[in-house]
Structure formats: C-alpha cells, structure tokens
Length: 71
Image (cartoon, rainbow, N blue to C red; front, top):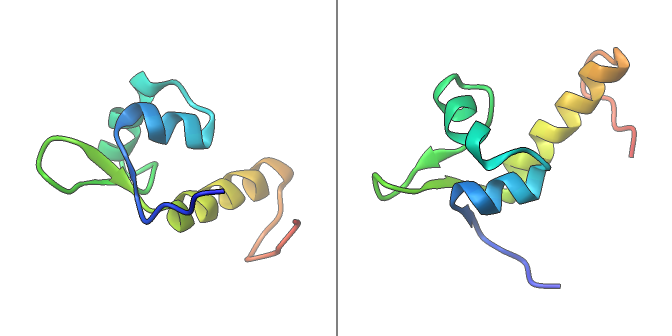
C-alpha cells in the first residue's frame, strides 16, 4: 500500500472520504472539511487530517463526546 504525503484534487479527496466531488470545494470553503489550496488551483488534504475529520464525524453520528477512539 502506498502512503501519500497529501491527497490532491477534489476527485481524490472525495474518494478518500466517500463524498461527492462536487461537495468538496463547498465544504472546504465553509470550513467543514480540512483541506486547502496549495497552488491556488487544486484542493489538497493531508490523510491524517481527513482521518481525524472522519473520526469526528463518526463520533458526532454516534453521540460520542471528546476524543474517544472507537476503532
């Protein structure tokens, strides 16, 4: 398995988190997804930031407070 330093582009980010690529830019602009524009054109996200975001979304869905690790 290849370890990536960063995930670049809405398609790759969407695939990584299971969302529609059309929602990625909007969610980042609204500060609802941890990504940024590195070159002024493409969205970039760090895998560890996306993983932390997904864990937070899971915890919110299950009503878990704090930093509980439900792996």
